Amino acid sequence: MSLFDIAFYFFALITVASAALVVFSRNIIYSAFALLFTFFGVAGLYALLGADFVAVAQLLIYVGGILVLLLFGVMLTTKLVSVDMKTGTLQALPATLLFAAVAGALSGVYIITDWNVLAGAPDAATTAVTIGDMFLTTWLLPFEIASVVLLVALVGAAMIARRDARSKPTQQAAL
Amino acid sequence: MELLIPVIKISVVLGVLLGVVAYTVLVERRVAAAIQNRVGPNRVGWNGLLQPLADVIKLVMKEDIVPKQANRFIHDLAPMISMAIALITFAVIPFGDSITLFGQAIKLQIASVNIGILYILAMTSLGVYGITLSGWSSNSKYSLLGGLRSSAQMLSYELAMGLSVIGVVMIAGSLELDKIVQTQHGWMWNILLQPVGFVTFVVASFAETNRHPFDLPEAEPELVGGYHTEYSGLKFGLFFLAEYTNMVTSSAVITTLFLGGWQIPYIGLAGLPAFWVSILQVLAFCVKVYLLVLFFIIIRWTIPRFRYDQLMNLGWKVMLPLSVLNLLVTGLVILYL
Image (cartoon, rainbow over the protein chains, first blue to last red):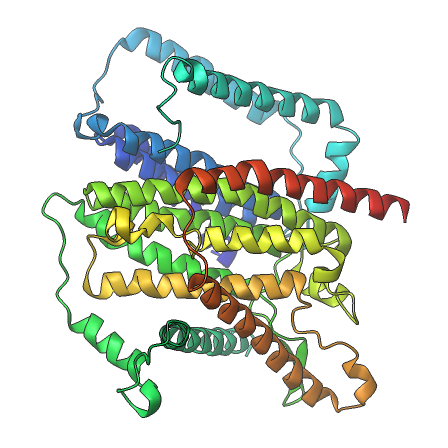
């Protein structure tokens, strides 16, 4: 087993084990906390594959941004913390069907896609330049549409947060 | 041999960093005393020079108290996260050009990462976990509020920080920190090319390190000790050290991005041997970083704390538009000049 393999199995183990904890944990804060390690493991896998930019973007956006907001929400809703999460089995048949559909779709994508397989270890050159070029030439339209979606989400969040600001002017949105 | 050089580099940098951090605590107390017309700690050793040692011994000997209702595991983990992340960031900072020792060129940087700047931003954004988790796990209202304030503050200022870095990246045309330093030769330091970016980055750095005037997460009059109210002994010590490590690391990042890193303008004209040039450059880096640390300290003792809404207003309504404008102007200048 080469060093690369050891690193791969290490990160894969972190990802899968913590993902299992996210799903099976009865304490919602532990679930959120385990998600940190899932994201971290995935970032490690990206880095191993030579996708340096994607790996750091994963840390920056998912770990540093989204998960903090998630923890934020969990902490502010303190009553949730002491509630046991249900982890039993409900509605077995629809769940099985959905699972089969998702698993089928993912396997299909895995088989159909023409993967870019490298012969040796990925080279150490940065991928940031290529990604930037692609975003602003070939994939400009999807890139811009994604930004519009984010803008809509932002406006929507502001709307929800400000809704009762007029009726209760004394209450600040801040902490 | 291949493994030996990085190990030596890591040990030296870690040792120097921790030493500097310990003495920065003393410097802070002495500067504060001077500003407030007091004497400050001067009893342990000559002029108080052994004070950091005494402080560490005191912290180690103290009892570690954990609140009964606290979440023990996360309560223990949080200070470790804070400290580890504060130290990890230093790994990508170039503190000198390469130096030739025993016939071998050694790069004076622990790890040259392709995307060094993004790595720094990612690590800074992880720093919020130590504080948030400590605030939550203590199960105390002061800690929780301190932790929440800190996460909101850091998330808000991260944006301005990231945007003001982009200007520097555009000028250097690279995300690698050593390349960014190399482009700042002669007079072309980024502080002159990117004055607005420099100001927004420094302000954002103050907010990210939770230093005055942005130290609301631990504002004593309202929140007792903030997120570390329920910490004692060595765990409190770790938070304390992490704050100062963050300060030194931020100063190093500011130096690298805006103050020319290890560059000494026009040192090539002096005709010194290469070895001594390298040594002088490392010294120049240290001097620049420490002047910034002193700046951090002096600000703390001269400017009052912001109110929470002022902090958020500054972050979203001043810093963010300013850094976007800076980005736009930089882009136009690079395109048309």
